Picture (cartoon, rainbow, N blue to C red):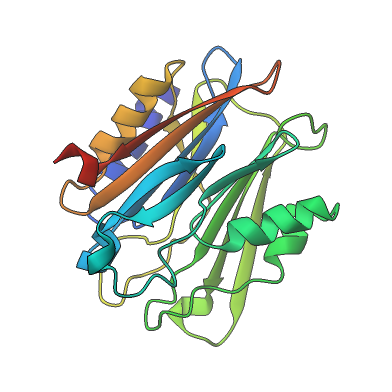
Length: 242
């Protein structure tokens, strides 16, 4: 029953031409590793002109062709950082906000309570964020979305989803947009469940294949060993595939 449900949700993602940026966090089937998957998509030349690259253990976005970069403000950032066993992943510069708050012994929620949706009206793109709490006895991982009320500036909504334990072979997914549109409609509802695998390469290719071929830009997968905190990362960039 669960496997059928997860495959239906995979089809939901695969049939969505523009979910935007997305995060999946969960547990491998063997319960040995926590998983993070993060992808970016783009419709404009500026958004598509990006790659992921490693930077001293962190992951950052970078212009593939510097001469074609027109506005770096919302597309160049660190999507993934880690600190003391906690792995942060976000769709914007709130990665740094969370990282700095954790350094001050603050919380994931404390950091995001200071942030708003992106200033890119009329879309008002949500800020989506996740964290793995390796070593925490209170949570395995968390997800969050900070978005504009009904895609207007009437109010800022901040939602937090706290997962006390991972579920074998299941990841929880959240992305910026419900689907394509003009303006782009924000994600609605709870994070939904998707299938994960014990193999990092199978996982990253499974979700790369789910993303619309015209709009996908980059994807990363990170597996974090629950026993010793070590981690592996894989990256796929469409610009490096040409």
